[in-house]
Image (cartoon, rainbow, N blue to C red; front, side, top):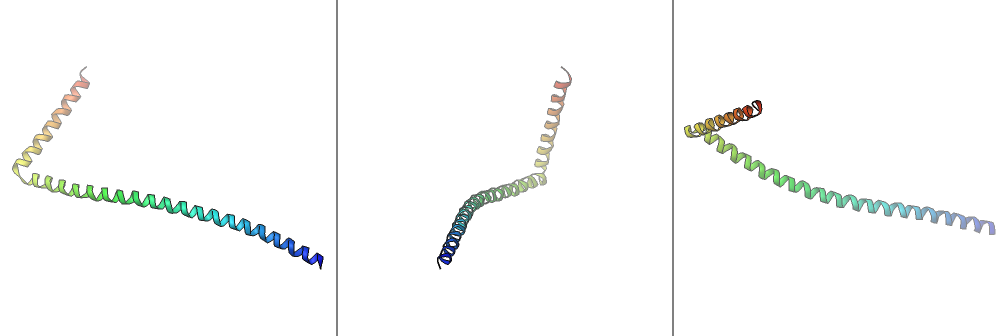
Length: 102
């Protein structure tokens, strides 16, 4: 009988060790889960901010495209664009001459 009691005591102690290990593992998993949750919340905020900025920039691009389209449709607008293109070309020529002729 005494041997049986010792055997049960050893089994009980072994089970306690296993349960302690299981508790430690479950606690660690819970902490990891919370860390992942907080990281996902931060990333969600970043994605939301990026989405808002992208939407605002898309709206701005649509407005700019409409303005350029309207400018191209008008004769005065075409003349202004040709003038801008000519000035850019002249600037490139001047910069090239500065670097070619020391």
